[in-house]
Image 1 (tube, rainbow, N blue to C red):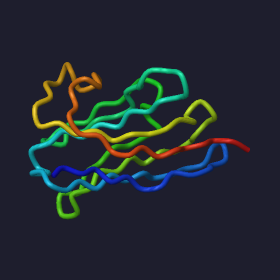
Image 2 (cartoon, helix red, strand yellow; image 1 turned 30 degrees about the horizontal axis):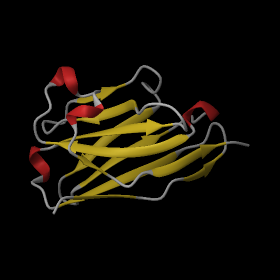
Image 3 (cartoon, helix red, strand yellow; image 1 turned 60 degrees about the horizontal axis):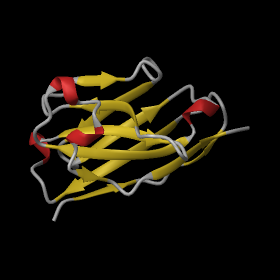
Image 4 (cartoon, helix red, strand yellow; image 1 turned 90 degrees about the vertical axis):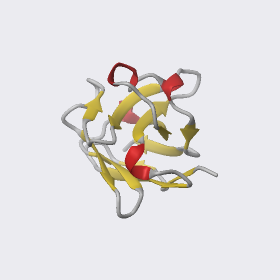
Length: 125
C-alpha cells in the first residue's frame, strides 16, 4: 500500500522560511517523480515544484528562485524548502507521486496516482 505522509505546516511571517517533507512508503522511491501542488479554498490545485527520478527539477514561475525541491533516497523523503514566503503562498500544500510522468506533464495533477494528506501553510503577520 502506497502512502505519502507529509510533515506539518504552520504559520510563518512574511519573509520567513519553512520546509515541508513528504515521506513515501510502499513504492520504489527511486523510480518515482514527486511533485508539490497547493490549493487555496475554492480554487484548483496549482503546480508548485517537481523532481523527477533523475533529480531534474521543475518550478512554477511564482516560486522560482524562492522554493527548492529535493529528494533523499536514503530516507524515501522529498522536501520543499520555501524561502521569502509571502501571503500569496498561503494554501494547503500536497505532495504527489507518479512512476510514469513525462516531462511535459509534470505540472498536470492528473498525472499523479498517489497523494499526501495535505498540510496548511499560512503566511501572515
